[in-house]
Amino acid sequence: MANYHAEIVALNADKIGTAAHGTADFTLTDETLTITIEMFDTPANTEHWEHFHGFPDGKQALVAGPAQDANGDGFIDLMETGSVSGTTMVPFDDAPENMDIPHDRYPVADATGHFAYTKVVPLADLQDHFEQAFGSRDLQLDKRVVYIHGVPQSLVLPATVAGMVGDFDQHVTLPIAAGQIKRVD
Image (tube, rainbow, N blue to C red; front, side, top):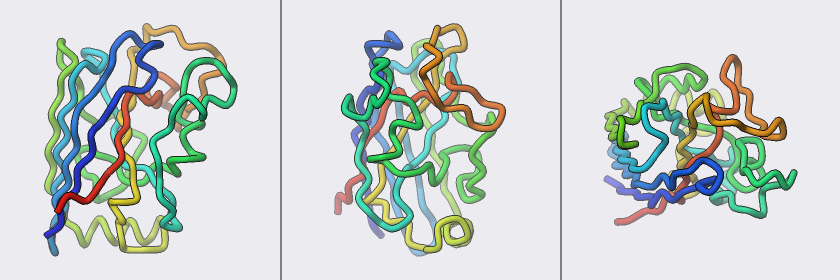
């Protein structure tokens, strides 16, 4: 068994009006990956996409910061995270093992901006899909970062904020918090 933890801190807080924060814990056994995420002060009554991001080649992913705001609009959007965080890899949704990312089956924050998520994932199924997508069965959790996304549609975003994914716009994909995953045992 291996345990991993991420302290999740706010991104774009000055622009979205709330400083989302929380924790993510991962327990990896021979048969399962248990994911537990608890978030506070996220945009209320809003669905929040959540994933781990990383580089398929195993390079260390890092949390994006102000230096990644390439267009200088004051927002760190999804596209700007890629240079240091890599690509979206595994969703924390109703079935992470399927690695089906663009949909509306993610946690929704309550009226106070809180949500808690726990999922026990069949490891072999996740590894099969991970290998198909990235060429390896090794999740390398300690080389990944967690991102929490999503702001209300009512938030006015400048046209420079990128992040359209399928039918989902920048309100859905805008990062609001992130944390580096570290092994803790």
